Image (spheres, rainbow, N blue to C red):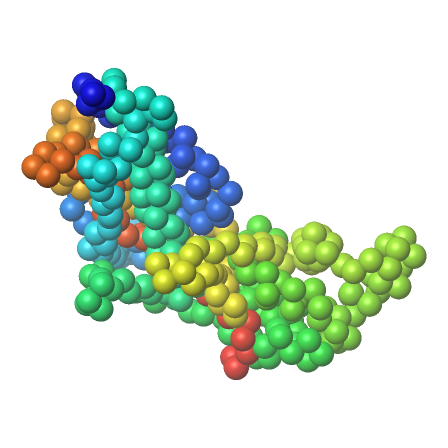
Length: 362
């Protein structure tokens, strides 16, 4: 008669902590969101930050011997946002655990490490896809709203951006004016302590980039493309995005970044992080300060694992993964949860860039 397994083999929390950072790096490596909005964490229940007021006026003119005029000290505006609460659980059932034994064996241990690893990978991917979805939605629209399975709002936030809307849609290849639009966008630096020149970046999906590259307006970008095609040294090859960015760099205009990443939602539909017609321009702060962060806040489930006396937790500790074996009935539960929200430190440096037409910037 076959013997039942004498013990279970499952990954320890120390092993899981090694796996998690490796997967985290792979899933965030190439996404420009984490350059615009790096992930940070605070040991607090909500996100709070201060933004200094603009400095007004000129130094007062005075005569020799006169006292120095006293000016009002500039103030600060305090902002706060309640974090969104996110997370999922996966369950390894008794049947799954029984079938995890090595093929052809009836005794010994039941190795469920592979099941754990698969569960961790799935939960981490879902968590980071949520961060990306919230981050890109905030940048491109200035707001986000999350609903639970019953359609109830669970978290939301908004910020007062000033979108740039092109007068003519870039999909109108013969009449749209990408170069003119970028020159007008560049003027948004006034009063913002930010540059929208060649050190700024505009993030668009592939559909909008393709429309820009196919422009035929001879009074705008189409003229540059025609000159390129008629130049023998180019071999009549179409102008690439790199070629356009080289021209934009020389003209002191923002660089275009093509980002067409997507995720598959729970219904099986493909969703773009940056929808067609809705990109974002991120300017360069004159002192190089980050314009935003995705701040992870305290997650009560990890309080026991925080370093005693520590006032700051790491982002990976806030993306908390836990595995627990339970009995009656037997099951193994993998849980991952995090709390957080975007913090927009310099709203004037972020301009939702909408190329669908209907705007009046001139």
